[in-house]
Image (cartoon, rainbow, N blue to C red; front, side, top):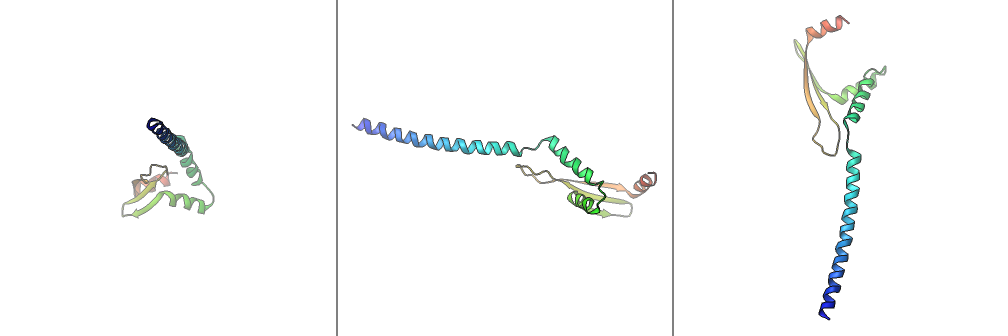
Length: 117
C-alpha cells in the first residue's frame, strides 16, 4: 500500500514537471523565433544606409536635414580645419550603442576640391 502511494505521488510529480517542461519549451521557442526575426544582416544594414544616401540627394531640404541630423552629432569649425563627429547606430537586440567616429578635413583641401568640380 505504501509502495502504491509512492508511485502515485511520483507519477503526479512527473506530470507536473512535464507540464512545466512543455511550458518552458514553448516560451523558449517563442523567444528563439523573436531572436531570428530581429537579427539584422549586412545586406539589411547596406540597404538602410543606401536609402539614407539616396535621401541626401533629395530636392527637399527638410529630408536632407533629417538625414544629416541622424548621423552628424557635432561640427567644430577651426581656423584651418572642419571636424565632424558622426554616430552610426543599428538597433539590434544586443545593444552596445552607436559606432562613433570623427572626421577632420582641411579647409584649403576642401576649397580646392569643390572649386575644381
